[in-house]
Length: 232
Image (cartoon, rainbow, N blue to C red; front, side):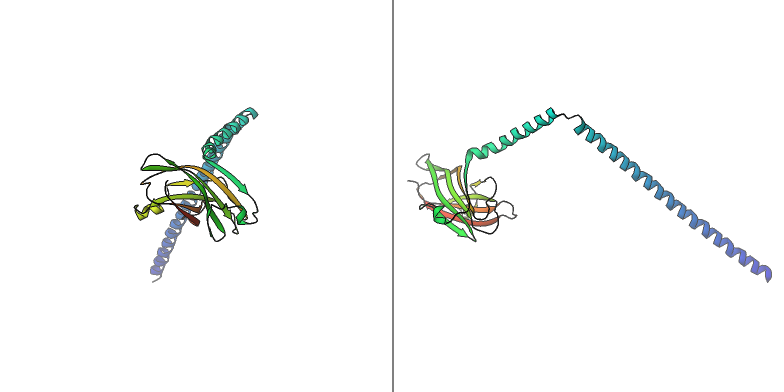
């Protein structure tokens, strides 16, 4: 009986020792992997740091005042090239703090207002090409902001007649873009050169201008104005 108990005790001790060794090996492997990971991340960060230093040295250490001056001149020239087409096709007059709308819009202007934003068709020019074809070459309009916030508008130009498909009435024939926005209480008069051709000049045409917010998606319509005309 005594020998049997000694055997059982030895067997239990053997199992415990195997379990302890297995647990110790597992912990050791996990610690080793953790150390390897730390070393790897440290190496990567070192490499990234060295790369960033090399890039910064390459980009900036060799520049002189003459270099930066020439770079500035090139940027100015590029910006002038970009804005030149807009300046050639668009004349703007900015007015501040209007007292009355009567002083802004002319007697012949077609005006419409919605929630403090007004737009007018002041005038437009038509060039007759033939007995059946003509085109609008210039549009003069005014946008007045009597709202509570600054707006950044662009104007969609639509043109159609009674024989056109209804979808044509909502299609922009041209978009008039402008520089900057319009503060509350201010207005902007625009003279835009356009090229909008149309046929069937014997039919009554509808010219419509829609004022939309540039910085909104989908486009937010502030107000629109419409005028009918016939080519004489």
